[in-house]
Image (cartoon, rainbow, N blue to C red; front, top):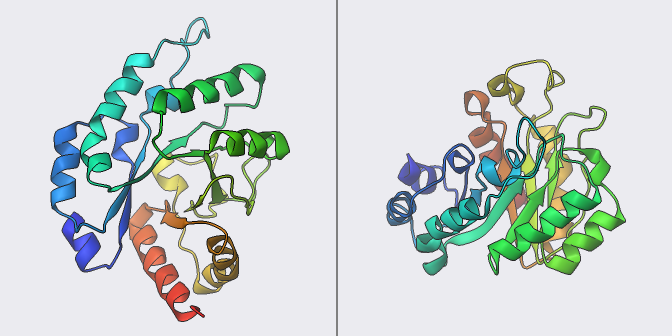
Length: 240
């Protein structure tokens, strides 16, 4: 399917999400790299032990996850050495709030990942503000621009960049986000009219950054691939 994804559907980048659920192996990425062209790029989502499961469930104390970082970084070598690693995406949970301890952890996160390009995605709107953006800018970390349901405390659509990479992630607008199983949460197909509204904003951001990545996470029933193909066409049609 990866070959089909590139050659038949025409996509030139892939956001790898299975790495959230299990630590990947170099062999997996070597195989994926061989199935794609030299120009194809990958974004790899961080393992949950780096973003979600970072505290002891009983005591709430921070876990020592240094080894997890090392194993994760090691797995990425085949992609980084071949120039196919666009960036690493770290998505933090809804319950991850902006406070001194969490900011310290984000700093450690950056330090542990070294020179690998990073993009942070926040799920709680409490992160929206200049302190967050300034922190990301100082550390050269990208800010993930999300579109998701307009619900209280979820992240709004904020057109902002904090590095030389722009990153858009479309989750859909299912109003039952908090009340349905995870796999149904992303049951949403954007209309063409909805997608067209984003074209000028994507173009404006792209003029300010070296690279712009756009991914759809509304994966239910294949909606993500359908909408991604639509967005690619709309952007091509609107090229100056």
